[in-house]
Image (tube, rainbow, N blue to C red):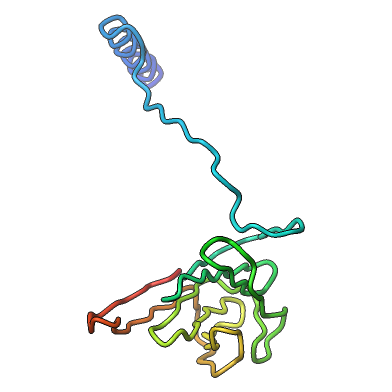
Length: 160
């Protein structure tokens, strides 16, 4: 019975503290922000859907790559959201995916995909042509790319 009394006392003190705060300041304090819908991204002519977008990467030209795990594919868009291309089908062959999670782009524009279900990393050209793969590994959910930008600065990306 003693723990029940302690529980009720703590609950009473919390309610009392809230009442004191409301009486002192007139209303509870809540952070309020308003947002205005600007536009849908990406913009396509027909309905489209991502089922489970688990990774996003941007190349030096501003193109956006999205790893959509449940559709087992990579989609490429312009920075404005216009669809460019997609690649990948379900499976374990070269260029196929089983839940791609992480995605990264190196300084040369090559795309690295963490193929979670197949426990490997696959490397592609920016147009989706398969180059090579590494794995299988124990579990692959992230890709880390380290490259130098045009100014010679070291850039790194850990994409999960």
